Each structure stands twice: as C-alpha cells, then as structure tokens.
Image (cartoon, rainbow, N blue to C red; front, side, top):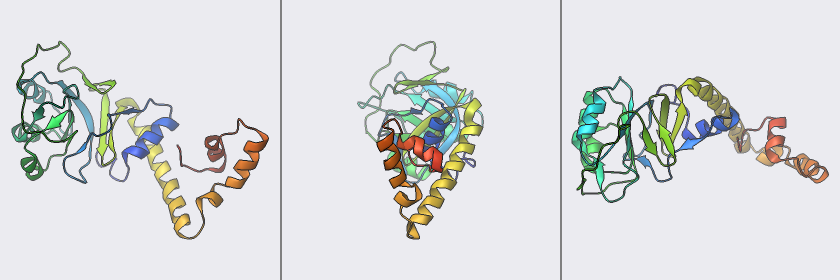
Length: 230
C-alpha cells in the first residue's frame, strides 16, 4: 500500500474521494508525522486506549504485516499514550506505523527507531488514569468525527491523515494518479509561461458565468479538463 501511495499525497487522495463521491474522512487538523518526511499507508489496526498499554499488546496479536495501528485516545492533550517501547513492540509485530488521536512521548527515541508515528505532538507525562474498557476496544477506533476499523485504509503524510474504505482504495489511488498527472502538466505549463488563467480558459468561464450564474468554476474545469478544486 505504501508503494502504491509513494508518488501521491493526501491532498490528491482527498480530491480523488471527492471525484469518486466517497466521503472525505480526514483526521482533525494538527495530526502529523513526528519525523518530517515520514509517510504511512496501510490497513487500519484499530485500538482504543484507556490508560494502560495492555490494549496495544493485545492489538499487536491481531496485526498483519503492513498494518497501521490507529489509536483512539479521544484527542486528549493531557497525556501521552505511546512511547518508545510501544513503538518498538509495534515494529516487532510487523506494524508499519502508528496514527494517534492524541499525543506521544520519547521523541528522540522515536526518531531513532524510525517507525512512522503521527500525532498531535509530544508531551512528557504518560497516563495517570485507568478507565473502563469498552467492548469495541479492538474492533474500531474513533478519530475526530469518524469511526474506523479493519475495513479501512489509512494514509498519512506532511499534510495530514485520511481514511478510505478498503473496497474503494484501488479506484481512489488510480483517480489520484490521474489528478497528479494533470496537475503536474499544469504546473509545467505555468513554469513555461502559460498562466493557469489561460490554461483554464478563465475569461471564457467569466463570460459563461455572466450569461448563466449557475455555471460554476468546478463545472467549467470538468469541461476543459482542469484538475484544481477536484
């Protein structure tokens, strides 16, 4: 999955979801990689955290190579729920990365370990609580307004994190690649001296909109083959 995502980005995947009418499920803003440049892509391995590492160890027993541990810590900013030992154990279980709705700790060690970790940021204290465990602890994870599970794939890069239904991944990635090719050609033409306004026949769009106020720029782009805003 990471290989298929290698030349793409989460913005491209988001645009592809819009084009394919797949709901865009993005992590809340601010969730990003601990190490700049790290990327992640793989099947969601969901887990809900209640203050103890034991739930992670149990989840690792279900891991398949390339899975990404998606941790629901309720977006808490008063504790770090993963550190170096949890990440090392994840690597030993074949987990390709961790995406945390919350905070991490042991940043220097995580950099050295090299497994991609995405979170809101670092915070020294670990959990000082032990909450009751829900029946869904290993079946699904909440992440912002979304609930994700093993039927989803997670993508993460410098722009953030997205979740896509596994059954739609192939077409989403294919569409994202098409958008990427179109946008790269548009960028090349801008650098060569052909402004985007010219490429998109923007004056024609303005004239059509004046005659028909319902004529949107997105509709115009579909007509002329542009990719921006999609």
